[in-house]
Length: 371
Ligand code: CO
Ligand code: CO
Image (spheres, rainbow, N blue to C red):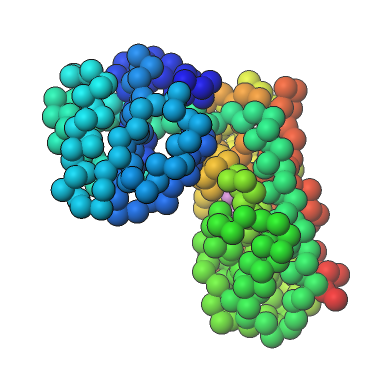
């Protein structure tokens, strides 16, 4: 086993699980370096707390296992679905576990894999092991942080290139598509962490707006929330811009949100609860009288997934430690008027917090970036 698989078996054993079942996705890549598309055919890694490991996969994928024979035994099946059950059966026989609990990732494991598992392990219980999986990947090592810094710099460079090309009358979709092209040009992986949000005018009051044919006009806010992927690690940034003269209330919330973002970043250090960071941002916004318009948590963990642990909400008493990477993204959303969000990616260090993103955070005029 490698160090990461050992960490997983340690964590599963600690909460009384016999093992864990993992299907294709970030956790499998993290543990083994193996990347598969999630398809109609099941691929599954089963690891026991005793250190046993088996992987069940379609025969055509076997080549990917080269050089990983020491990690687990493999069991392949052919195109005929009638052969799939047999592969699961053979794999499970070698593990020698007949009762107890197997942990699964509830947001990843599908009914497909679960059905095969239940059929060949009828006496075992399959349980939600979110706790194990979030702990496993929460604190990033130096190599992971370097990749995340690269993902942040690619995203920022792509945004600067996009801003130069923005013109009055462009639609949200046109801006979003330009941004996607620039993200790829800047060296991002082809798979985006999420589809960029480009929201003009009062659309920016919807935190999860989807780009439409709305055209940019003077007097509009332009909010963009985007990220790049680099070697499987993500960035997730939001900046808001003005175009022409905007409503004074929108200018006011711009200052408040920036202050909230700064307060939350200043609050971050090892040994404090995640909730402390949320409250630092939230109190600035509440004190300015906009509390009811900050309608989401202050941030979320970031890494191989766009949303992962730690989640930054007021009640979260999870203690942050060095290597925890998450977003700080306070926002104020005034229905019918517009919204401002300022989102950074940060990491807890030995003595404080470092921001991986460093583009100017203020709400600035688009005109100062356009060609
Ligand atoms: Co975002
Ligand atoms: Co975010």
